[in-house]
Length: 91
Image (cartoon, rainbow, N blue to C red; front, side):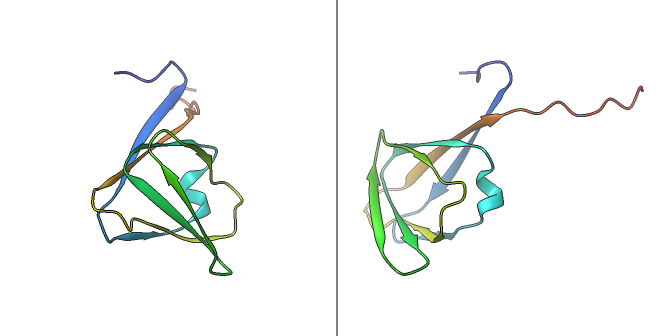
């Protein structure tokens, strides 16, 4: 399935028992969909919040430390963001 014109979709996986250090720049202006599994977001203060398949997230600007997969199956997150036009080298 092709993303709608002007958008790009990136899949990010987290294996069972794994984690991914949060980098705000990585998520840009993306709307994030939990496509499979369950993900836990760990805040800088140590509190956590879980999200399951089908949940839609906005991660930009959140005080997060990590994304964790404490479940038995891989997590797949789909990040949908705007595709920005790059300057042409012809100009």
